[in-house]
Length: 315
Ligand code: TXA
Ligand code: MG
Image 1: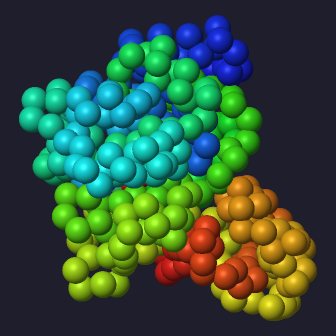
Image 2 (image 1 turned 90 degrees about the vertical axis):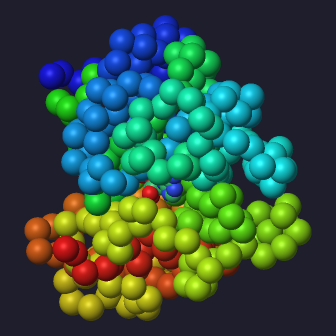
């Protein structure tokens, strides 16, 4: 199959919507990372998403919808979910909610769970595509399973060309790390740190989230230790490069590359996955990458989560 690279004009978006309606797969830009989109009601389209990514099929997918009204057709919105939707949608927040009976989603999307993960993305191209396609869109990050998430159309092409119908090119993603995932089928729990900070969510909820490591924390499926893995080995909390290492700096730690010379976490998140790829290319086969320490507050929580997984022992 030849993968078409489509410019994100109105005609291009309409063409991509047609591919989705016909059961095809399109990589779409979102404000977090590029997603591999398919019709969430169509077993065959969803099965092809898993196949294209080589993703273990027990790991469920996020359903992307144009607005909260559409979300209500597939998920049961709790009062907390409504408050969070008002505060953060459209935007980089995913909520895991009870699945609505008879919602018509492919059971492959939820991996058979009684819950569904839903998100209303903010990227104007994603919004227009969702409106125009008029169907619920299942979309994991558009990378081969276990690899670095794509924040540019060229990253998607590098990983998935020949396996999907099209890539809609909307430029570089502004947030750069995936959405924050909250479990809301019980006490609000952080399942994955991401583009909306824990501090901002706790301010809306008026109380603390259940955090990973807490005994009350539900197990999120598919949160594997090793993820976002480049080819090179990765070492964390480095203040200087060992011989042969490519050092990615932050703030005062200057490197061969820098997440943010001014120590800005928003800039660091936006650059993270691109720099992981860039450092990997510079390190070369059998090479090594070192990352400077990044503070753990705000977006730093998501950045450190991704870095720990990139550095984890590989299966
Ligand atoms: O920013 C994002 O969230 C991007 C863009 C494309 O929207 N998508 C994304 O999808 O990161 P993915 O598939 O790479 O990550 C989805 C995560 C997985 O870790 C999965 O286990 C979790 O969401 N998830 C999905 N449904 C769930 C459910 N019902 N319960 C718990 N976790 C769920
Ligand atoms: Mg992913």
